[in-house]
Length: 297
Image 1 (tube, rainbow, N blue to C red):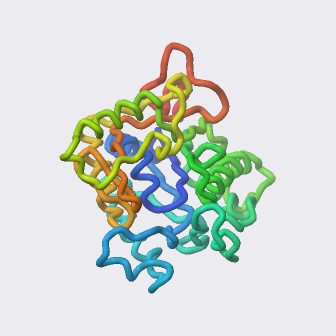
Image 2 (image 1 turned 180 degrees about the vertical axis):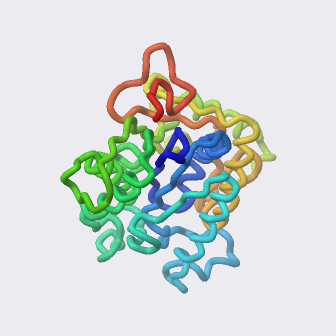
């Protein structure tokens, strides 16, 4: 690892497109600054709803080829963000999208929700010990909004970080590694309210049939819980916008706003927010760097 970048960031996400919505500006910024940014995606997103009518045949109730298509969308998004290291947990198609909570697809053999925890975490341990990141980013225990794959991604990331540091767990996967800091994705309530105020100001020019509500935004927390705010700025907001556009089966982007398959407009946030997994926000206000205060080696 002597030639590895000093700063190493690893993100664990459930489906292609989650990374661009939650962390696109962050990933673009750190990649541009020379950090190693590694994305681990847990499923191919086979159960997603398809937005463009001309691609409706990809859906799971028709050709069931959406997962393979989304591999290409994810690769295109990573090019927009400048991220070269992106992989699927256990390899492409190892775990299938489980669908929304309460659906019969949650019980399907081979779906991510049904995966044995330590088996799935073992695949992540292999990546953690190879990349040796100081910082890991994933979801909160509810997965932001209760999707089973998001909840499972949180559990796998948490367990993987724990097991990676145990020298007696799977020594064949490499020497142990301790992740210095774990963050959960979130959005500050104040930023959400300001973003929806901008959206409502569009009036008749609003690009989507309806407007979502702050309750539709995953992971909203009180401002005081935010530990880090990564400001994307114009450059990295543009990269995030382009990455989200690359996920065309799942996201419709119009300027600083976007909609999912429900056609309800939401703000596209250029500043991205993070909670510390193991403690409250730092005193004196949030940091502006995920690596703040860490000894980098």
